[in-house]
Length: 399
Image 1: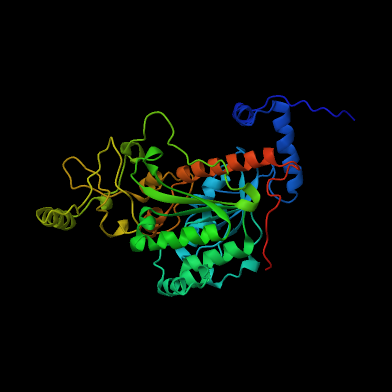
Image 2: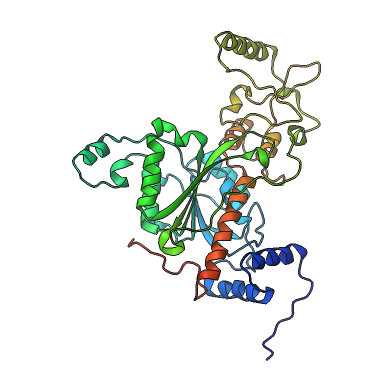
């Protein structure tokens, strides 16, 4: 049996990927392909280069295959990003019934419910933990008292009663090599910085190197949407200085708001005279007081304000001018486009729920860009590991 393989007609995108990766790690084509195939062989039941992943966004091979879980999943913005670089979901969790309905329609996967009712032992082992967790204030009175008395304390004291406590409990029990967390921009200033300090110190105390940065989605979609991404790497796997860098927006012309608009829109999306007069009066009242509150009339050749979960109430933050008519709000299809979700994904809930879901979601293109940078670190670790195992040395806790 011949030991050599000859592969013809390699798709251009795969050829480019191999060349980019091998140059980064100073390997020949043959050396890099053998490394990747060796890794795929060692993964066993984990996804390989040849697995088909049923998902809203077909997986594309851009790095080392890995598994992930999707907590506080919403409608799967982080999932689409991780799948785009070859990740395979092995568990999901989302309590909102309407979001569950959308998630099931898009991924053929019904998420588990309330995270507070999930035991870590019920969660499969995984390589990346993804979570768009809510921001809640922590009670630090007990922590401060223990500090003054010189007594040690852990995250269970600092975060008790919050949803982050349950997330931290899962991290402590499962010890995933990589964390990919997302939250609102104000997380770092929330509760005078105390919230971020507890989160950062908790993750570092569990042995993670933590990277955090606010990213504006306006580089990928025509919407000003700032969110903080928190990436953690287990020191026992990646060492103290993993070569992670946050992504920069793609080059070329920025997307324009007019690109997401539908040509034929039903009259029901045009504001009524009563609502339009109310919004104008509300804005004028606040202008007189020196405040900036009011509606947002969007520049069609620019970007919109941030789409929020409350958009269904009056649509005020993202209004679309119409010649000879009152302005209108986005249609659900336009909201999906504004967030960058693929066109083929069906909207299976009411307009109100669709606005809430898109307003709460993670922009998939941003998630994909961050996931690609994580994937680069996994590939780097593969080339560093003498035994060809990315997660050698991974710690596991008793469950």
